[in-house]
Length: 378
Ligand SMILES: [Zn+2]
Image (cartoon, rainbow, N blue to C red; front, side, top):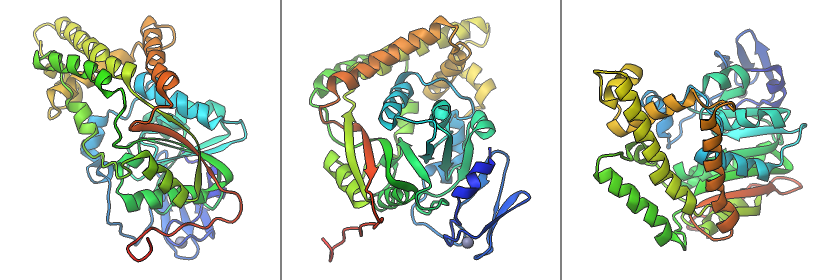
């Protein structure tokens, strides 16, 4: 959706001019004369005549990633996504007057889940893999985080979920600096990402992984899709200290941090849910007599090409999704499992590990971005 309330927040992503005219089906920059077309459900605000060295695989392999991400349909915030959503929401403490920015919003689900709590949520992403519901209901822009199409101080709050771990260091710097620029002074951002740090209770967490591997060996399930999803995690910010430094460098002061030591989470993800998936797919194959393999179901629904594990996971997710309304016991079972996973935050949130939620605040006063540290400027 491209609503009227978006326009006052915009500046030209190419030349930073605010001299914009809204035409039929496009926004025109009066200074650099670039035109930004309004598509079905979003506006293309990518900077023109600009080349960036780094391009995310979500952009370069958009079609392929789209197939694997299963992004079009929305599900309620449950399981790992539910834990992220609930923690980000607690940290942001959204108010009905808030204008909120989801920077690199993916399919837009976090924005949609929070739509009831704020005045306006704007999502942007360079890849246009938006959910159908987001295209219909959420204010969306195709944009590059290094050159955001928004004026200084446009937003009260921002969120960034599963983003930073994908970027090299210089892109992280630009991403955070630009996000800080479009936040108002005193505005806050909630970030969820991941460093390379290990949990002190890793040996305990590994028990679940070991049980999971046992089932993988027995052919009950595999982790292809998860591996694929994590395949471009660079984790350029290797430790929590790196995260703090990067935030401060961008003019953002860490206010609160909660770490996610995944003891319960790991048991749910590696054992409970995977067994559930295997059972659901097994039942479904038996129902569609003759076509016994999960691949047969997946082929009809997905097209061939995805691996068996990916197919199995997507088939299970689709079968489940039909039952994910609040009148279904399956919804409440998954909700209870979500709370079980969240116990990790309540019990071990103080203990340093890789995955972290951080709330950071933009310093009051004039905004001065810090220079990147370099060889001659240590
Ligand atoms: Zn311009």
